[in-house]
Image (cartoon, rainbow, N blue to C red; front, side):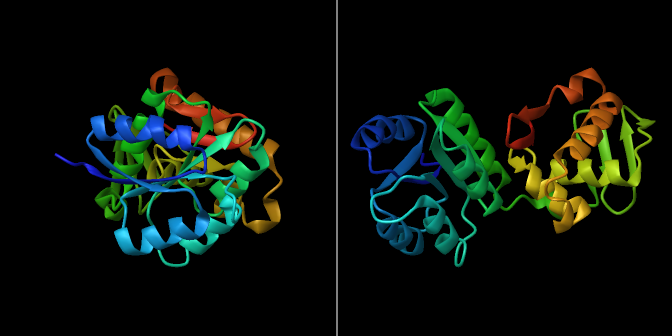
Length: 225
């Protein structure tokens, strides 16, 4: 049974030779593109369920591919990036990518990221008035939260931060994305300020839940499922 169609956009033939059988064995139908223009045509015509996008393509930068793709599609995009591409990785996340995996990557990690992104796709929970994670219950319409039935005592800003993280669970949120959403575009460089709120939130969430709030060094934060 096919669980979805995955478009792999990479000009490295060995990546396709490695990923095609692995994706097939995991229940996905792999699609292939080695150029940006080809990738855009396939997203438009084949409607894949998820895109794995390398930033270094021969005909156009991966950032440009992402920008053009987002003009007509909301398909989940996971960036495949080299370790020295941190600036490009952050820019891609700010431009609408859902996640990133560094090369060389472990297959198990990549498949887990794919499953998470696909679960988030069209997530009905976003429309609910209440979000939950383990013993955490968060009211989306008022600054109220409970942990194991007890009030969590969040400030309005902490509630907004936790709500943003819950709505994007499993996805990397960059410092810029969080700061813009909560404090506005004039505060996109106030990373130290954000760290203070993250620290306060971790203390209130307790050991088990705070362990799910992962720091992506130099990039941002991810709330794991």
